[in-house]
Length: 218
Image (cartoon, rainbow, N blue to C red; front, side):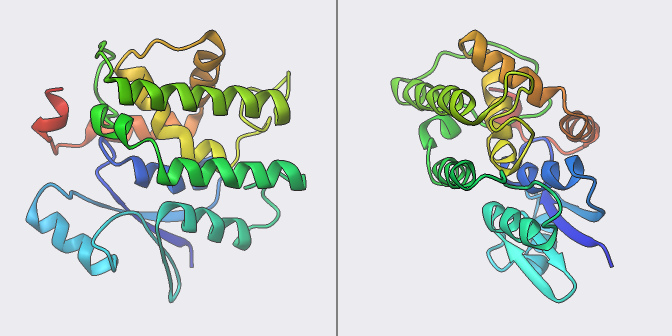
């Protein structure tokens, strides 16, 4: 029986993208259930799957896992042959630390620049607080790639891993709001956006009929 991943609207759900892109990138078979959380029917559908009423939720038979980072950890345990986390101990510890920082932080950027996978890039001036979030993110990416990355491979730890999945929605935010970033940051963003799994998510988001004006009109 394949894994089953319950996600929210692909156009707007940053948390849902994280386990989805990881599973898709590593070619791990899974079924998906998409819930439109912007109408009552969709929210009711999601509540049947999720103890919190939020997405994503992963099902593996009778096992249910919610919260994106917990799902990534579960996938790593279930598929130890995949390099979900970096193999080296120091790199793996660093990957988990920055993933947890992403999970808990950068709220000013999240609030000011909501995820939208069908928005055309258009400049939006950042608040000082959001700009500080971007500054910290750029430091994380630069220091991680310098310390643990590879000159021949573009991702944080060389090959794509769970930490990259955690930051994938930030790439969307920086891109669609045309946030000024360093060439090194842009190089990393381009590498994430070139992933087939990322492109597949964007394609699905573009086909969704659901619209949420408070995000699309920004």
